[in-house]
Image (tube, rainbow, N blue to C red):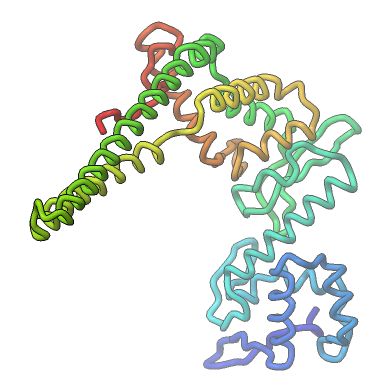
Length: 353
C-alpha cells in the first residue's frame, strides 16, 4: 500500500526516520477516533467517509485499507519486524489506549461475525489469547470436531489450535469450585438461615432499645425546658444539661445508623443463589452451547488461554464464593463434619452496640 502511505521516509546521518505525512495524518487520526467510539462497523465507517467525500491522496478509501490502517501498530509508535514488535522513535499519531480500544472492537466484531456465519460455538469471543490478546474463535473440522484458535488479527500468533473438549474441561474445573456439597447447603438452609433470623431479631431489639433511649433523653430536655420557663432552673443550667443530652442523642443516632446499615442481605436469598449456582455448574456439560455461554458470561469477567492453561478473573460475588468454598474444602480435610461446623459460612455481627 505504498501509494497510500501515511508516513514518509527521511534520511538523517545515514538513518531512515519515519515522519508523519501532514496531508494524510489528520485522516488517519480521524479514522481511529471514529472507530474507537464503538458506534461503527468497518462497512458503516467507509460508507460515512464516502458520504462526506473523505479521501486519501485524492482517492476513495476502500474497506480493506481502513482495516489495514486500524491494525497497523506504526500509528501508535511501534512496528513489527520479522515477527517481533519494536518501539519506534517516530512520533505516534494515536495513543496506545486508543489503538488498543480499536483492536478490542475489531477482535470482538471478528468473533461475532465468525459465530454468526458458521456456528454458535460456546466459547467464541469469551477467551483471549494469552500471547497477543486477540480473541479465540471456534472452527468446525471434518464436520464434527470443534477447534478454537486465535484470530491472529494482530499478526502471526504462536498459540496452536485447541480442542473444544480441552477448553470445556478447563471451564468445568473452575465451575466445580462453585459446587457446594449438598450437606452444607442443607445445613445452611437450616442452621445458618435460622442464625440469620436470630441476628435480625437481635438487631431489631437493639435498634428499638436505642430509639427508646433517644426518646427518653428528648423527654428530659422538654421537661427541663418547662422548668426553665417556670424559673425553677437557670438558663445557664438548662443550656449545659441540654447540650450534654443532645450529645448523647447524636451518639445514639450514630449507633442506630450502624445497626441499620450493617444489616446484610437476607441469607435465605444468598442460600438460594448458591443452590442455583451449584446446580447450574453440575449440569454444565449437559447444557447447550448458548446455555453454557450465558453461565460463563454471568460468572467470568476475563479469561485468557496460553500454552494449554486457562487463567480467569471472576466477578466479585463469585470470587468470594469460590474463596469460601476453597476454605471449606481445605478445613474439611483437617476436621470432619462435611463443612457444617466451619465458621467461614456463619454470619457475623457485632451486637455490643
